[in-house]
Length: 132
Image (cartoon, rainbow, N blue to C red; front, side):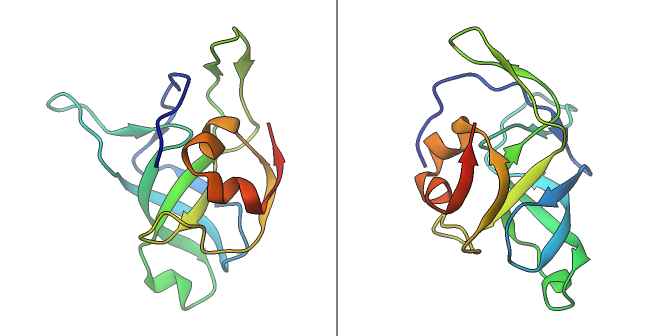
């Protein structure tokens, strides 16, 4: 896992529902915790594009609903600023499921994903259709 070139505004909180952007069998994910989040006391953890979250499967195949997989956020509604000065935002929040070695569990990613997520996880960029 590499560092990101830009500082992404964190727009996805605990309990947020994410669309699953891959073909693993999960449809809707719910954020349970943010991995490696270091914050101030009493502050609710938040995640942004390129962050790893532990989530539960709300909608999907029956065997997937019993799991609490790791996922990488690849799209978020909240806009963030890139070093070039452009502002980027998507129309939904979405994530891709990964395994313990930070490799995608599915072999196809639907929809556009952010460049910041590909910088940090190059394996996801290999199976993505569109990188924005």
